[in-house]
Length: 626
Ligand code: FAD
Image 1 (spheres, rainbow, N blue to C red):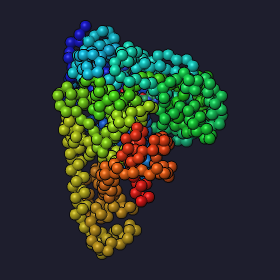
Image 2 (cartoon, rainbow, N blue to C red):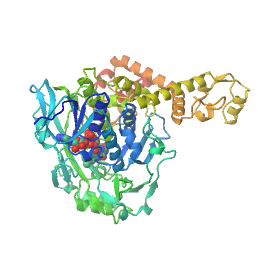
Image 3 (cartoon, rainbow, N blue to C red):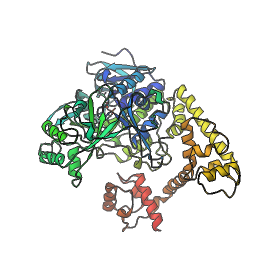
Image 4 (cartoon, protein in one colour):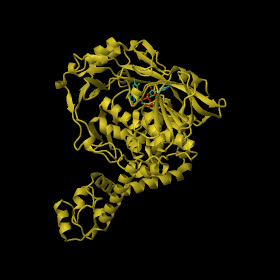
């Protein structure tokens, strides 16, 4: 049977990649269908209900700058907000929100359901309709599990952990897309018949615990931050629901003994699981094996929601058998009497080598077919959402017969993510970090809108409301910066005396306020009123004016370094170069450089796994050496 409507874009999967893909495609004006297993699970968070974190919030804010949904849903669903790295520079500062799982899902669903040009349909996609055969063919639709054919110009596949999903709890395993959901088996088999390189990865989640069985009095309380952060550039504090605390407890030697004694019953250590797990989000059995000298690991006890008694014990993800999960949890202070509501588990799933993609996220071998999210070897909602937005946008641009958008590494973390995946591939779940970006002083979370909203507007995915708010903010920043640059204070003036009262060195010549703001101890609120009044009372304008003034010099220097890097293509790397002496190189990169001994910096930069950030570190080291 044929579906009655023909679409410009079909997005398969209603997870984090799928919702951003469908929304972005629809925002271009393309007629879009979101086809997903279950319309009630649109926007479900498979693991911890938390959004953001280091490197990840940069992606969330970029999605937001391009008018995506993730940050807005976080503001409506976030029940504990924190600014991470608040004492460090703005390049690595990050926002993290613990979300109420139900509120977040409701917010995403509300945004999806109210998006013009977007239809939702509940069915499994079991096959793709191709025009032609194999490499060079063109996708032109999908076939559902009820054998319905739906036609479209472009298809975006965002099947997450569902393709060939296999759930492990101890030595027991069964097929599943995630706990409670069916796997995508027919589609997985069909894709394996197509010319793709398919691998297996794994991820895991901890048991959930009933809060009524937990003793919080022995744990450390972790309230949200004041002032309360806001995730979206369009967001406001008024949107936040009630805020609650998280708690911290720790594993101990007893916990570790229980795990060590049962490693032979772990599917990972018994060799039952083939897939490689996330390096930066390891299971507790992985942690105690890899960091055998550590006698304790932190466990963040995080609420799953305001109206739920379930807690997420972040840090003890496991696929050990249920009886071992019980023992290990009961050995942790505060959890002695904990009741487990859901067991932890690991899941193995198919992923596609991302080197088979173009930078637009279109597959190289099948035209108009785009892949996004976990199926490209990434992990995390934010990484999935970012790819989804890009793939959905490009799928729509293809349908509209327009040029696709390929974000550059110096424009955004989305560009870094896609470039890393496509140039280096990945053998383990890839997550974003600020250290992956060599242009991180430029790519801050606070300026994602200034970097991307105009681009998004030109591409047709930024709506009028955001565009108007953005233009006003940008103008206010420019006007206030201009005011600071043209407001001078003279030695001996009242403003100069006020400066001295702040403990600053007396000025010996005329200074403008913008230059004064570059002094480390002076903040914008102090400088802005030395003479005259700020032109805006918006804290986001104030933040931008301050950061741009303070980091002006550093940013200029970084841009010079980048320029120089291009010229260093032929710089020789001495045979005896001591890579251990170079700060910031990961063990993985060092091993590669020692074993492959690239002759030039250019050659080193092309080695899979050697990041541009690592090349910058080597370059800085060579500069110091000479
Ligand atoms: P998903 O969120 O998985 O969404 C896929 C969607 O596609 C679902 O709606 C599904 O129903 C639908 N779908 C699949 N196949 C079909 C089909 N054939 N037809 C129609 N619809 C289909 N991330 C971390 O960062 N840290 C972690 O520690 C972590 N642990 C995890 C633990 C577990 C057990 C799981 C399952 C995931 C974990 N994740 C973790 C990953 C995180 O959930 C994913 O990165 C994120 O959800 C990926 O988003 P996605 O949109 O690519 O896929």
